[in-house]
Image (cartoon, rainbow, N blue to C red):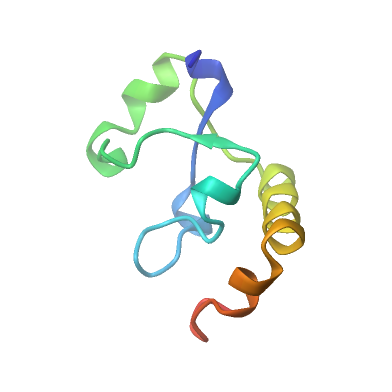
Length: 81
């Protein structure tokens, strides 16, 4: 995928497990592989054009998650909610 189409998730939008609040398979955004340690390599993806998910994109992804997988959304752990 073209790097400019990929997103990273800012730490302010990560849960305690350092994963995105929205499951990547239910998101409209295409996230960079979690195999990259963004703490160690955050600058490199941005040099290629990878950007952080914006608050608007996050809200859109959350809406898509709720609408497309309502049951999974309801069954997320209490700490997630």
